[in-house]
Length: 139
Image (cartoon, rainbow, N blue to C red; front, side, top):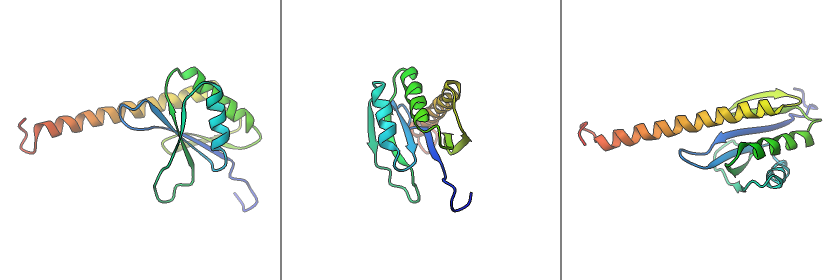
């Protein structure tokens, strides 16, 4: 990319934390209000998130998870509004670049987020079991 090429648009979806009903959406600066509008229009509950980490440049929203249909539709509406842009979309730092994502693409990424959530929950349960055993291995 040269200095005159737009970096396009980034939308990254991630699980929030173990057992959380929230999905974290990270989006390119200046696009969070537009994404939030698409999500709210589909009846989803959305909150702005302040993420304190060095180097992050994406704006963060949290969405209360419910039915996947409205979320998929809202993301596709956001993509449609930005169809003239190169869009990087994915999860957990694995972003794919394309013009024109489909509902199947969005559903695939949401399944990856579900797998993230499941892995976090399993890790949390493992840590809880280890803590319950104590340092010497006895309850």
